[in-house]
Amino acid sequence: MPTNAPGDAGRFRLRQTQRMPILQVKAKPNARVSALTRQDDGTWLAQLKSRPVDGKANAELIELVARTFGCTKSSVTVKSGAGTRYKRVQFPD
Image 1: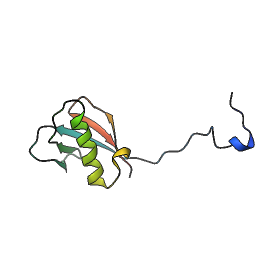
Image 2: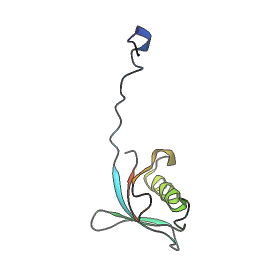
Image 3: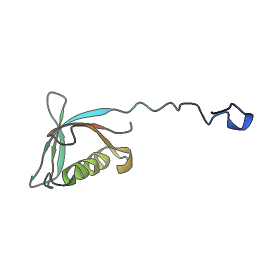
Image 4: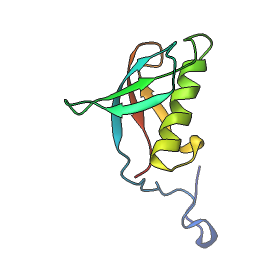
């Protein structure tokens, strides 16, 4: 059972997380070029060279989002839709 000893003051507190935007992305694997473009309806189209096998297209999508928005690949996550064309991708602001 955790105690609130003076040395453990911050150990059991919940951390506040930053606000992180979420992109709604339509992935198109097997494209000729890798590109991320914003559509008129506010969603994003990700053209990916990789095939959708063994998570390769998702890995390329994460790399593309990180490069486009200037953040690290480790901070970009696919929140939903990892196995579908329509995905929700979260990254730091």
